[in-house]
Length: 87
Image (cartoon, rainbow, N blue to C red):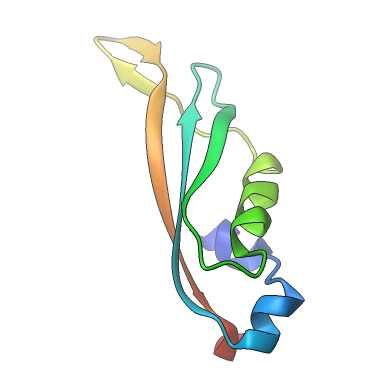
């Protein structure tokens, strides 16, 4: 979450509109830790969802899920709280 907060590029149009709220992005953490199937589940428009997708595409690998000692794919939904006021 810290990395997302430090690296999220708030779209200028969203800043101009004073957009605040929560977007949700879903993705799959693969066995190798890479992120796939990135999609916006809840968006506030003005480019906020696209900015989140672009950010996650640049993310370092995550720790994969482990079940019975084996690495497994895990579906994840990440809420991202945005506030244009703090930008």
